Image 1: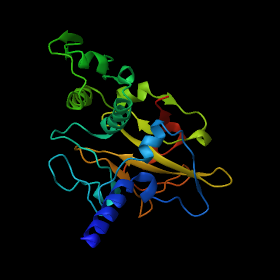
Image 2: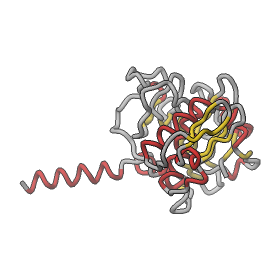
Image 3: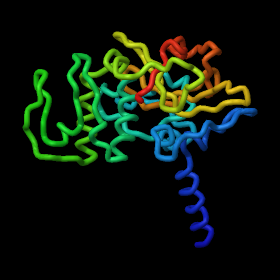
Length: 252
């Protein structure tokens, strides 16, 4: 019995700590760039991961065509519809963080049309209809209702709208966890920075995450087996040309 309890303790201990920052140790000669304890960056670093070797799958359950570039899979639902694609994954991560903080007023994303879709209206029972909010339901701030709100945003937002919402990062030396490499288009694409490490010269390496088309798991990426990317090293992953100061933006 003691042996079984010990195994269970070890299992749950490993599971609890199997997250972005713990699984991916910083490269030799580099140090973790510190983030504030309650920040978006800290939350991203603590994202739980599915077991090692888990492949990237589409919303239909098929192996994703991007699986070759999988370093890890974020343990987060993707739904049963072809909605949570590249920009949607970035929106989902940001929305999840704000929801956990109960910062409902800050959960707001624009549709490609320019319509401001905020969670407060949705939680208060309003529903989107032809460019307007219409009161149709009871007040509901629950997590399932938050996910329904997310699906609404995924349906009408994309890289074009998200790119306009994000702020330009003019100094690449200020790159930080939570930043986004994005190019709007049809299709465009984007990556989210999950962690940053730097050496004594302040040369930075970073982890990236993405979703893709069709909708799939959010995956931590690797390029030829290396999960640590840098601005001055050309990447061979799809849309790797976006890993550049030109496309670097952030939420705040």
